Length: 353
Figure 1 (cartoon, helix red, strand yellow):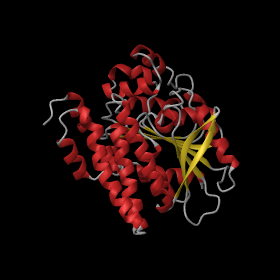
Figure 2 (cartoon, one colour):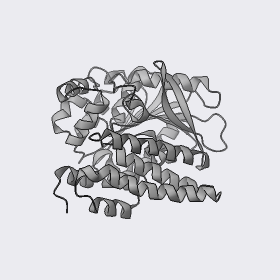
Figure 3 (tube, helix red, strand yellow):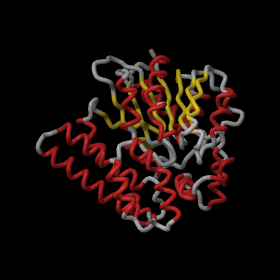
Figure 4 (spheres, helix red, strand yellow):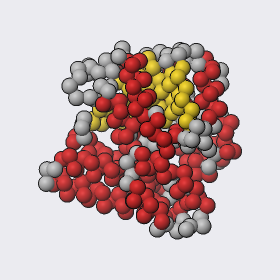
């Protein structure tokens, strides 16, 4: 058993999320058992990711495309989890991040349904996204998906699946300070600016129903989504999963690795500046502008985002609200994902039908 407190905290906190989002349980157990400290994290996960990538490449060479898609998708998730909070060695982090993009990109044509990389114009550059459309449906409704502080579009397969199965397209993207967007753009509290660019892009396509656009966000994305819905009235319904009401208000209670990642991805020069940046991520005086239907999920045992934040959002939003507090749930209730994943997708389907 490791004596490194950061590694111990990571193992205790992340296991349910990793398994719920595509990591094989035995891999999680074996890899975390062989680490001496958190400094080993990115290297060890990248080594196992390379094994899954090799399986995928072998299958692709034999034109076994379903197996290739499965293995390459999994490899992308492993590379993602290798890099996702590893800001202490940016060389390792960037190498693993590059590989996660490559692996999911290689898997996209062979997924069911397949995916398409999209580049969304934004502030003279682009934001990268992945669009997937349900088979056999002309101009489906679309759910715009906002990831969190430590998630990226490459982690999205498990999140996308319930919506695709119910006839909705998904467009998951890396916004400012996220995934591919972390290098050019800092995290911003007024995330509605990025979402406006995404919806403008959707409206220029001819294959999606622009009258039926939903918004979804997970973790810090669970703040970004309702924040966007407060300003962007083209959003017809919104799902907020484990999002803070005021990120800065809980700064001192955040895990050290989370504060490190926010500091890096908000392009702060110090923790003092990072705290100032965190205070700009707030729904204070804004939540009452949310008038579209809103589905909110939080775990009562969440040690990152207090359940009280979800309850406050439910009180202050002005549209119809469905609040689900999972009493034995951790952050985003990933340890009880079966309680909300299908159910929230059912809800979104009803709102966009």
